Length: 148
Image 1: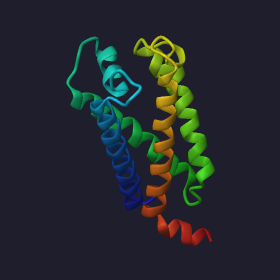
Image 2: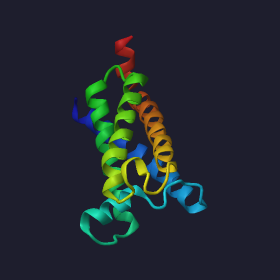
Image 3: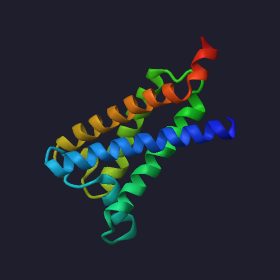
Image 4: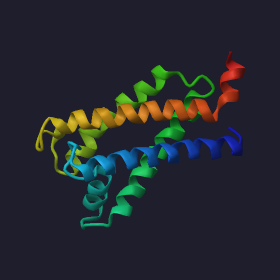
């Protein structure tokens, strides 16, 4: 990938992360989120052993979303198939349920809090997949044209 393509891939990840963060924070604020707290912030709190400010959680979230967005673009460009992004999102969902959620004390699959955690994370990862696929297609149009 060219330096310009790396920049576009990082931009896709940051935009995806910002859009998801806005949705996640909004649903928490209005009380419709199944999550008792932002997972990125709880992860950072647990990792450092103390309560951290919300921007630290957002930074963790943006880094995670940007990293996986760039990985997707690097490995699946120029095709950027929807099935590939769905598989990535599904794998990350399972990873979150088996690693991140237990790490913050919610138990495997979030069952220490309740089954709504797994459903909430499924919705989050579905949005991640939709945004990543759409943004990738928008930012890498030339890749799509050359593959046709």
